[in-house]
Length: 241
Image 1: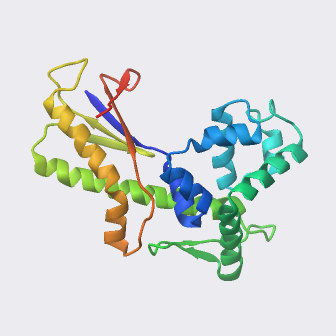
Image 2 (image 1 turned 60 degrees about the horizontal axis):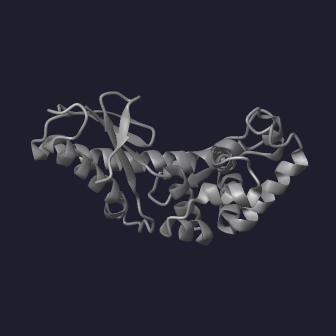
């Protein structure tokens, strides 16, 4: 049986942590459906569009880019429309707007970004003499997200090996961990698989504390995982333990 745990909103949590945006932090702590809220606030046709819009903006998306992409063109082909949406987003999340400005200032001044836990990203101007804004905004979020996943993966592996539970840690896929475990039942969890689910839940929730322990940097946001199980990745059922 496959057991899969996804960290809910990993990249959004990372962006909120790095920017310390008060609105984003409050939404996360209050379990607000941020993408649903932004769908209504910005007039998007569905939650998926709202979600993709946010992540694209976190990675340097522009009004022109939104107006040209096929997934956003049915909403509007107007660059002015998308600039207005971007302005509304930054008006709501002022901390993220300020953080994006500070990232660009740090790179244009020093040529690098020093992350809170010590990782350093270096940048160079392109052949046109321009700083690569998309990678400057992208690397901190994607990079710290990967580091947090690594903490969770190692934590789980150590506990799993020590537990004597049966199974194999197959891989981490972006923001999820996948375990292949023998089960006496094909359509429900047996005791072995149930205990693996409990361990996964604990390891994900412990990531902030482990981050602080490792790097002496407080991580003031929770991490939550959604665990599912099934005989293959197509036929997965959510575990509500």
